[in-house]
Length: 351
Image (cartoon, rainbow, N blue to C red; front, side):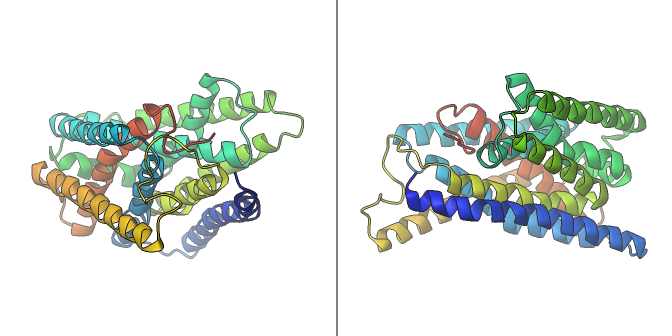
């Protein structure tokens, strides 16, 4: 890492991380005040906030993660990466259409993996993860931090979570959740207890293996508790919609400016360090358009093959259901192709 880049990361990283924490704390305070004032935030309002956060703010960052990962990779690798991504997205579409309940379960697991996995890499490069010393503990950390995204709302907002789950499954099979709905109260308790054990286990093992100063473990514990508080207080539709742009994306920007850029084989998609400003701008524009068109084609294709893409009587709530499933379609390869199978670098690269 150059000295300028190192100085920039050292001065900017902590500030940006504080912004992500302050954003969640601010939302917690806001919605506690709203609740105490007896104000009801309608589902339509929550849906508008969700769509703003997930479509306008978070989606571009997801595309940037892949661009940054592929920018200096070999051309052959890029081709395999993109083909694998599209094939996996198509496979998930098929699973959701054939067995929407299983598809929903996969979608929930994807949200946990993306939130927890990305969070862990950001924590590693900023505060440190010396207190996490085994693969099993890393998986526990992913489940603890990412699990807040889904497990906490299931416990805190069961009616809303169930309603939107029904809408998502209703895209393929209206009433398809009825068969397992009677078990929801039981599964809610099991999930709540299981998640509590996961968090206690993660923080407990981390405390036992923390280094002398324990700073990484302290940050990990505080942030995990903050995430739990955020998803327990902020209505689930708003919480999920703003979590990714205000927490996940911001923290990945910090990781990006902190890590050293690798010099992997392959030409620079933007033309390299000797390219003119015009060349860089033109290539960046072309890549942006190509990525946007590809995403749009996948979205339109998914819309076309789904029997009822906007379920329910409310268009805004139906769009939230559609986007929640669609974002899972592109998030599954985002995590598996972009990180798990890309063992050389990956979208959450830490040298």
